[in-house]
Length: 299
Image 1: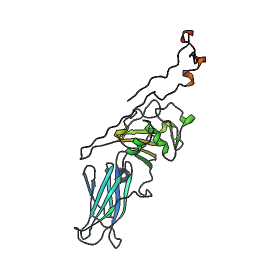
Image 2: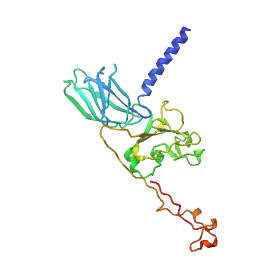
Image 3: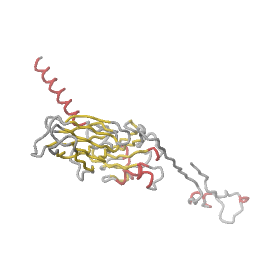
């Protein structure tokens, strides 16, 4: 009985540790990490760390671990300034640190310089060339790309720009809402669609349940082609829509999305005389149907 209790305790501890490392970034949040070291290369523990989101001035605080590790999990996407302070060292400031959904932004080695805390060393944050903190593979499309690329409101088609994604074609094996996406060779209905981290899957056929048609309110669109166990559910990929959130300053945008039939032409089945339509110059009194471009206007 005692042995079973010990085994259960060990399992619970291992599960807790696994969740601590695995959920640094989630499906609607990101994270910032790094390692604090002194001029000799020794790790600095208990350093004060503050990350301030530029758009909202919201502050997230933590301390470096005994191993000098910085971990700021569950951060909302946006731009941050990160400040690291430790007794006997100049403060370290990183500006323009970009946090994206489902990704960890690594500061790398935070090198502290001996000096007064009133002095500071400021660097500009930059995205790492190689993602070294996770084995997850994802691609993000920001609001400017979504608004500028002429794909209409078929936002799922952005996923086709990601490596490892192709149109499913005859391999879809089902009807599908939206674009038929084959991610990593899986069928079209093997994908997981999310809207702000909430389930947006059509349970009867493949694809999303709700078509999100307001491109002006999308902050970013993310596709995860190789994901960790935290996502689960599907074999293919995760397609995640993230909507915009507010900031401290009053602001707003406006846009017009128009679809119409002004520049449309008739398809063969809409004008072929063999299907009962009037040939050019033929009188409808002969019993044929005049071909007319279907009216369609959507604002």
